[in-house]
Image (cartoon, rainbow, N blue to C red; front, side, top):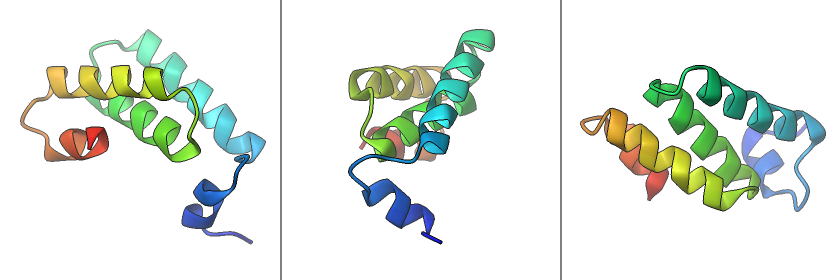
Length: 77
């Protein structure tokens, strides 16, 4: 079994991770003012190296909604 770090290093992430990206995107649509959801969507997309433009948008939204949260800034870095 691969660790999370090893999963993210795969050229093609497993289908389960890609499904999670879609679930977080839906969560952001359902709860657009939830900074945690936007941060998680950004982080997971970045780790999967998928939809990076969208990941940046989610990261920026998380920082906009919770500018004092350092983990959101860290995701953008």
